[in-house]
Length: 422
Image (cartoon, rainbow, N blue to C red):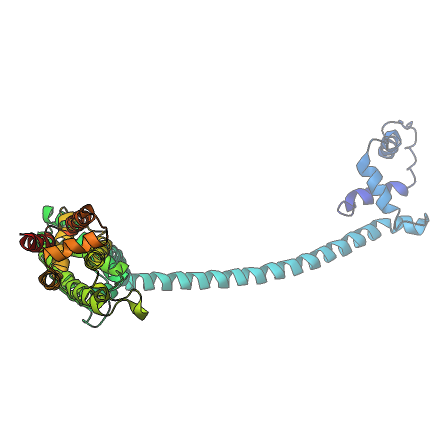
C-alpha cells in the first residue's frame, strides 16, 4: 500500500474535487463531456468487493487518516508521500546494515579464499618437492611387504625344519642331567625333521635340504649317544634283588631300537647287572635267608635232601620268572622283531651265573650221599621212588621255562645224578 503513493494521491484528489466550471454562455452542458463527471461516475460504478488492492489501500489509509476534515484532506497526499519516504528510508537503512554484513562476510570469504589458495599453492609446492620422497616411500612400503612375507616364510621354514633352543639343550645336555619325557619328544621331532627334509631334495632347495639332513643326523647321533650312556648307567644301578623298571627306561629302549648296536649293548649291560644280582641273591638265599630271617636259609635244610633240592629249584624258578617280567616291562614299547628271542637270551645269560654255585652244591651234596644212602633214606621215610622222579620232572620244567642256556643247570644235575646212580 505504501509503495503506491500515486493511487493514494489520486484518491486524495477525488476526495476534494474543485467546483465545476460554469458552462459557456449560450451552450448547454453535456453530461458525459465533463471529466470530473466521468471520474465520479467511474468511482461510483466501481465495486469495491472485487478490488482487493483497493480494500487493502483503504485499510492502510484508515490507520493514519482518522479525521475527515478539509485540512486533512488537503494534506492527505503529502502525508502519504512523507509516510512512504519514511518507510523507504527505514528500508534503505535496514538494507544498508544487511549490505555491510554481506560485505563483511564477503571480506571473510575472500580472506578464506586467499588462505585456501595460499595453502593449495604451498601443498602443491610441497607435493612437487616431496614427489621423490613419496615414490621412495611407496617403494619402501612395497619392499617392506615383501620382506614381511619372506620373514613369515622363513619363520614357518625354521619352525618346521629346525629345533628350538630348549630342545637343543635337552638333546645336548650333560651326562649328569637326567633323561625326561621332554627328551624323547625332542628326539621324535629330530626324526620327523629328518624325514620331512627329504621333500626339499625333490625341489630346487637341495642344498638346504642336505645341510639340514646332515645337521639332524649329527644331532641324532649325539642324542643317541647321550641316551645310551644314561640307559647304561640306569642298567648298572639295577643290582638289587628286586628292581623297578621306570617308564623312562622303557621309553629309552623304544628309542634305542632304531640303533641295533646300542640296543644290543644295553641289553648286555642289563643282563650283566641282573646276573650279579641273581647270583648274589642265590648265595644269600642259601646262607642268609630272607629279610628278618624269613624264609630261613636253604642250607639249614641240607639234612633233608628232598627239601634241599626242591628249595633251590623253587628259588631259581621264582627268580627266573621275576627276571623275565623285568625284561618284559623294559621292552614293552619295543616293536622290532625278535623281542621274545632277546628276552630268552638275556634271561639265559642272567640265570647262567647260577650254574656254577648250583653245580658245586649238587656235587658236594651227591659226593656225601651215594645213591644207596638216598634210596635207604627214601625207604625209611616211606617216600616212593616216584616222588624223586617228580622232583626231577619239576626241575626239567623249571629249566625249560628259564631258557635253553639255563638248561645247562638241568644237564649238570642230571649228569651228576646219573653218574652217582651208575
